[in-house]
Length: 152
Image (cartoon, rainbow, N blue to C red; front, top):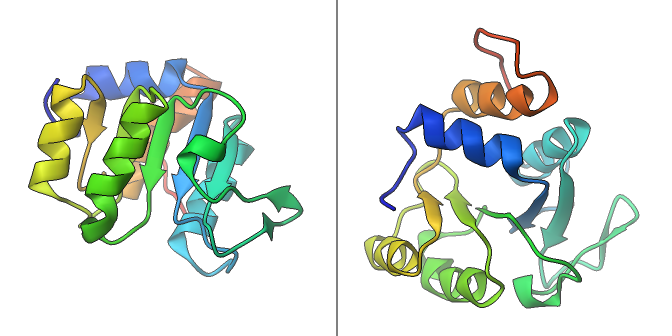
């Protein structure tokens, strides 16, 4: 499947059916986007696993050194790392059989994208604007809502 960041139907299906999201590059600093997005994802009902080898815990939750260390299957791998790390992260996402690779805005690596697509992952690379992604995510909670929602 190609990069699906513009495919609203596929995005709605992915975010409605997914339950577990690994946040690679999750920071313990509340001012960072990775922290804020992870908190939002938890607030709307996803189980979130922080992945950061430099941190032991975030807000009392265990932080994992790698995707492979997470104790259960992961639906979405959400990446907050420099694009240079994407080839290695894609290898790990493939190894754990994640269904979807989601990178944030400006996080793009063409070789990693190609490898993820060839391995059959859904790919949302170079992210989505917060209003679009929060709208899809909130549909998980209430599929009848409409409009655009903002993510702080």
